[in-house]
Length: 141
Image 1 (cartoon, rainbow, N blue to C red):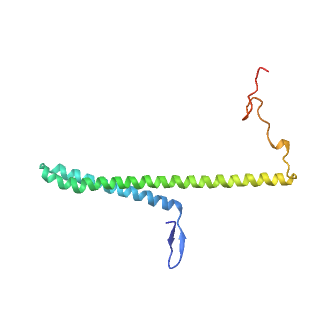
Image 2: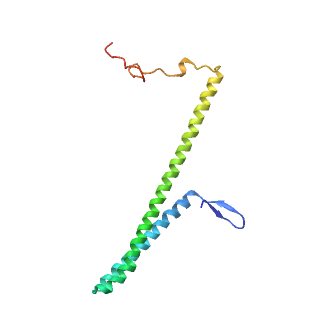
Image 3: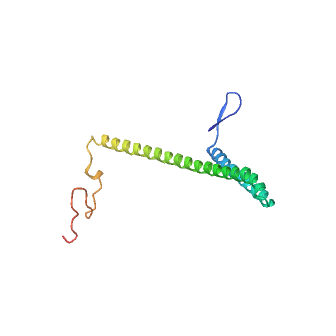
């Protein structure tokens, strides 16, 4: 859905914004159509005083309108879930790229120094912080 045909054999990329707008608009249009059916059902039922004459309005407009409103809502929720998953995937890819760059920079720095880590390459720990396996030093020492 991210490409449109621009003629015979030509494909052009569609901007992400257009795709997002069309997907959101699709859900809103379906929900609005359901609302119109519900309004028509209400107007039809309000004109009839006999219950037997009201049932066709409820069955056709009421249930159909309710179904369209629910489908439109589901389309909107699915669109938001997909957008959230895409954003999470982009963030994960960026974190992986950053991690790769950090590892590459660290190994390049160690290779330049002769493959032995320098003592000042690791920051000193806070004197009041406990590391795993050790007890925290006392401040009253």
